Image (tube, rainbow, N blue to C red; front, side, top):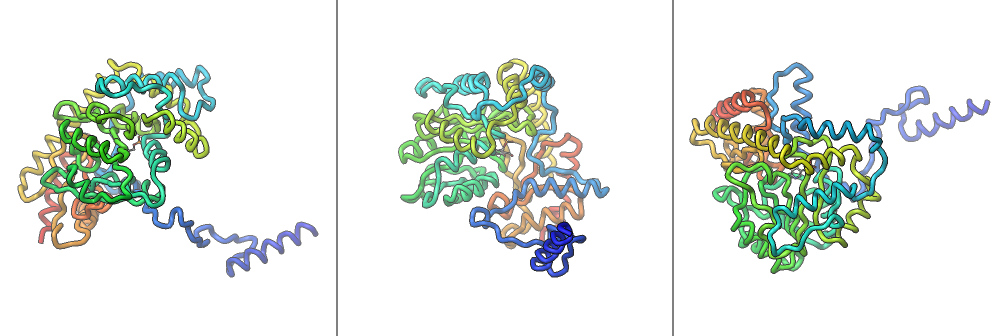
Length: 429
Ligand code: PLP
């Protein structure tokens, strides 16, 4: 009897919220509408992740799609790192760790950072390091800790899609600073100054850059860091691709900045060590800022995976072995870049940014000067007619372009770029 009245009650509640519902046929969750909170009302899903998901779905449906959208190395995590993770599991390293990461890893990160630091920069210590679930979380921690309502953050554009969203999630305003394609889309101090206001509080810097592959020279980096130090702006220096450079070594912030008072270095193991899925990134900042970010992280995710931390410790703690793997991977990326550029060079009307690092080619879409979303239209044509997935430039606030990732096997890269050249010709009007 009691059960009967409870079911009746359920029915009435369901009926009131959804007229066609019955207690035996509950309202499908997809039919329930809701209004997102003001926190997420403006959020755009990650376009880069969406492209890969679409490529995967088409492949699952039997289409032979070449995915040149993904931003992850197609190499396996080196064996010595995988072994370290297995050892960590077997030795019981499976409990919560300190939120900011295990001390040996933070010490290894401090040592790794100090190895390229200029002598005038204060030595980095382990208590200035916070280890997070990928450099994405590190960047987000820093944005939330440093920026807020009323603040403006300069974002050299095109930039990685998540910077704009993270600044917005911190309730600050991302100000795109458009650079010229002729300068590989690299910004100068003058470009930053043009967009600066009294509200400017920070700059997002990324060299080598996603999506362009451009690498700032030592002098260019020095000029930018000098300006930011003079202005008292924070620099969030995203150095996730710093080990993947083709023309010598890419410059890091702590080699050229006048000091590191307002510099947050963001780095991680995802790209250089082929460890995207392990989710280990970190910030190097000051002790008070590190403590604040760790406190924030303690309420959101706590520590990153204990096992992944041990794997990252092996990666940083064995530089000779790691260098062998990284050098082999970078050599292969270099060869693919050259092969892709050679195919593109067969059609001189295709404009491309020549990348010096990372593993992306930024290519101007056909009809870029006459269409509002030439990149999006070109991406659709490419996947629909030629089974090649690339990312529309609208994700990086430059809708006339597309990003092609050459983190795929050489034959796929060459075939994919050949099809892109054909598609480009087809679409030009
Ligand atoms: N920063 C840039 C510029 C990236 O391209 C990416 C990933 O694509 C990240 C950060 C995030 O890397 P992680 O896997 O360490 O979170």
